[in-house]
Length: 383
Image (cartoon, rainbow, N blue to C red):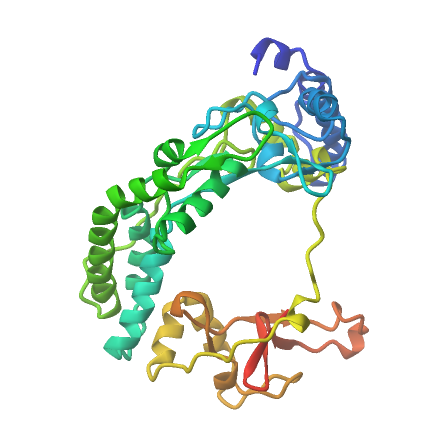
């Protein structure tokens, strides 16, 4: 982004005219004004570190495809108009293409290794197998921390086509679910072109996986050993703060040249405003009625220790008396516990007050309901 053009933008002039300090109520009103000026500066092309459905780049993309509607995600909006995919080397303009529903696809995703998920699954499995009867909070924190240590690469922002190529290559190579190709490996697998999805070469996918398999098996062996140590209080970890890996998206990474933007605009409202006319495929909210539900997995004997290892679940459990039951479905605390993804024992509750249900203050009563799922006939109904 041109610093000179940014300094001359309407938004920067507005910031200079409003140095503050202001009261909280004054800031609320000024934020609305700042948001409008900022959006106009992005549309005018004066600020290019952000994007949007009406940016100069988006207008150029519309002209290229002869289509007006976008399906644009927040990573696209929050990243620079000059962004280049570190995997395939294409610009945002080159990445853009028309989707099956006649919309322009404009999506960037954070590509990540799945070793963190493998680590959690191994921890929950080891916890159950060891029969540990005491919660392992520090062991759980170790697992959170160590997932990154076993990753083959750091999180990185890529175009959706590169991320999709990873999924396609895994199917072709028949690699395990916790394995992911790095951007360097994906680059070897694909044939890319402007405004079209990548073509994945099956023979290359099999070759690259064969090269990566020994190291993957070694990582999984080490993960199993660490998981057992974490689940049986035989680990070495003392918790400390850890910085997040930077992702070049506004709201996820603090960029020095955007200090005034960060001061006057909250990330989520700004990204929604810039992308307000984007077209997004509607989710199928009736899917839970249409798909047969799988029976829930049986709870392990030491499920309470596993539950308390997740501190938020433990707090919810301890906050409710032993004889409590849900006022909606009449299930007890123990009946609300279930085994979720990666073998994790879950007890998640949500506080619902009468205000949220439209009841007057005179009848205000706290109501706790299961936030994740209701058991129906031995299966589950997700909401």
